[in-house]
Amino acid sequence: MTTTGEILKQHRRTDVAKLAEAGIAGDLVFVGLVATLHVIDPDRDPISITVSEYVLGPYGWLLSFAALAFGLGVLALTAAIVASLPSPRPRAGLTLLAIAGLGMVVVGAFPTDPIDPTDPRFVTISGVIHPAAGILAFTCFALSGPLLTRPILTATSTTRVRGVAFLPPAGYAIFWATGILDNQLGGLFGNRSATGLGERLMAVTFIIWLITAALGIRRAMRQGCARVPGAAVA
Image (cartoon, rainbow, N blue to C red; front, top):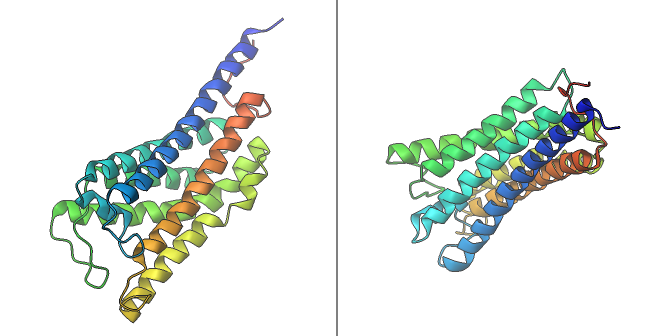
């Protein structure tokens, strides 16, 4: 006979799985909209310009929506991780991931100014807030991945997340390396900047980690192979 405690546990697992799915949805919306912008606004060079600069084009609202969806998805995944991990939880990693999500929401709310990698001056308040929030989000993503990988692995037996633990810091290093080389050489590919390429590679590493973690939590909750803290047993 199914007890009240078992029913509550099942409902809680379902709720956690839905949060993980919301996180995946946010990632996929971001990827889909950014890919669409590359097609419908082809005059911008994806190697040299940042993704943020698509907001300056005729379909800029799509980029704002993509960043908002991504940030909200990260916050949903953060809630799923909190709900799936036993105490004591890794507060530093969870706080960093939440800040990264909030940072992406701010990125979506405050459009960038035109960016010249060799002369990074911003002329509006929005143009100051946007890069500051972006760099904060990128840094928090890079730090949170390694801090959260082991706890997620332990709680959900998701072995795949172990294989992608290095990706967020690696992507972050690539981003800064391309930026520094661009600045020193006046363009990594001759006169052509590689800032956009470095940012896109970094985004790919973040998204792979986020989706891998979310899929692991979703699988564990749907299959009932993870303990769910906080559910009372009758």
